[in-house]
Image 1 (cartoon, rainbow, N blue to C red):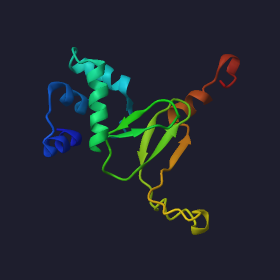
Image 2: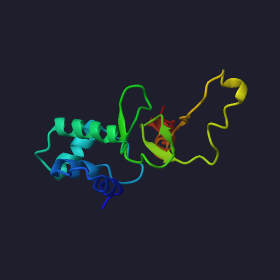
Image 3: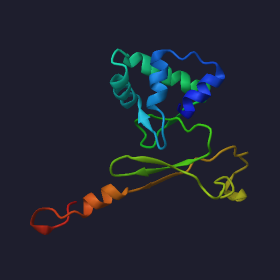
Image 4: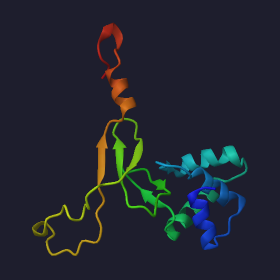
Amino acid sequence: MSDLLRRLRARGWRLTAQRRVIAEVLDGEHVHYTADEVHARAVELLPEISRASVYNTLGELVALGEVTEVNTDGRVRRYDPNAHEAHQHLVCSGCGAIRDVRLTDDPLSALPEGERFGFQVAQATVTYYGRCPECVAANAAPGPAGSPTA
């Protein structure tokens, strides 16, 4: 049973077939699916599941604090079931892959007092951007006439 399913059961949240499938889709490490990706995977497990059920359930899971919305590109919202462990994100600027990372230092302590401008800072979000090994390898692969691809 997935961690998300365990948490939802412990809360007494009514687990319909649709909700169970959505929770199963969100199971695993480094899961950051869009609503459409959740729907596509859920349809494989429960063909009759509607897009509206997926969107409504994701909204409920966010409202419950069991899933967080992640937006790393300013456009697409992704859903992260790793809502109860402090982490940041590492994003590939090539393919958009997202990985959870755990910082060794508190990002709040990295903001000097003089740069807080009187704010009582409650949280910090750090997102790292770079290229994943697959995108680096694809970029280094020789193109026509032995020249690297762009």
